[in-house]
Length: 80
Image 1 (spheres, rainbow, N blue to C red):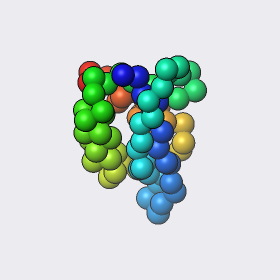
Image 2 (cartoon, helix red, strand yellow; image 1 turned 180 degrees about the vertical axis):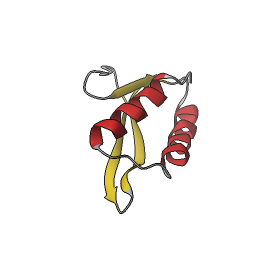
Image 3 (cartoon, rainbow, N blue to C red; image 1 turned 135 degrees about the horizontal axis):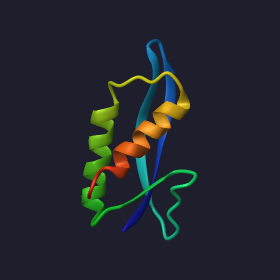
């Protein structure tokens, strides 16, 4: 199954944070303007969303571009 990943980048006292990761099934994945990934089942996808929350929750970023590219690279490096 193909999914399109979305999340929120919010300001904080120590920098920008990433949270509220969500995956939407898609027939037209778009890695140019977003982050698309493939996952075998919805259950594995849900587990991956929890992993993203745990991994990125404590991290802080200096700008939106860095946050976006870091999440994108992390997702691209995963095999689900």
